[in-house]
Image (tube, rainbow, N blue to C red; front, side, top):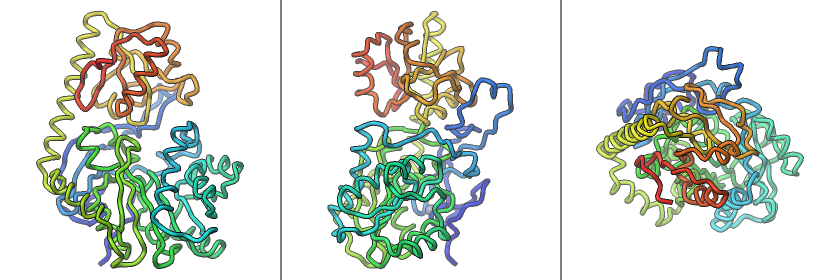
Length: 419
Ligand SMILES: [Zn+2]
């Protein structure tokens, strides 16, 4: 019987890719609010919804995963505060999906390329500039921006029904991308069937997902949150694609989001597989990802980092010093709440003046998010770098702008930065 890949809201009882019951609990991060559910001041008086946040690994296919599905409407609301085309560096990074795909596959001009979760159309624009026809699918209101910018975009959730209607209106598709959404969707089966409907034999499905090896290596437990249901190894992706008659033909590691993998899966079994696939599988095995010990060590490291961070902050506060946070990526919610950093310990989180998060509060412990001007004026004794996976360039910029505070790096080990 085929494995069911369309998850219902609530507790998950078996592996999300292979269906195995051999799931090992790695760490329980407690009940947490969805990480992007920032609150307005008036909401602080209301109850908040929290959900179990447990990280497990499958002993059979080595998929990292959480075991609770929160309803999509609660996670991805229409005004989701995220837009990809904001900075030149990010545009450049996202364009690499097109560059890398077109260097591997020889598509005739005007081949139709699609992107699932296409945001403001930045990824597709790079394909368009290189002679492809493009079509985006994006559920949030950002779809309107994409259409205004000339990237045709359907505002909807991608699923097998939508795929069928796109096939009728637009015909066959040469390539479909899913960058940083493939680990997030609960209706994975519907997506896979939809992708399979749209692609002809030999068509390519390009996915980019946060990579479990990077997560484990650099102790990124703060990237575990409800939006992020699966943490792929290459092995687990091969097992998943095989169930839909796709062959994983190539892979590359990329540095997006603190370490991701870009995987090329071609429709049809028995396609030629690159040396990169074989070598990364070997590396996963050599790194211990197919055993259990490496995950135990990961849990020990993250728990120690959490104790050390809390001790550092408590000591500073006992000495009458002021501690704040810098930068408020989605992942800061898991880190702040799991560590127990309430406003009596961390007064506020400073964000750039253009941030859509100013004036809001973190869910859970309600640390306020304020304009970084406040921090520059106050020069607090310590500032915790919450975007620690990009620490170096950010600290350099903050120093240039005149910040003198000592900077605390929370992970992979809690310590004071020497820059
Ligand atoms: Zn599994």
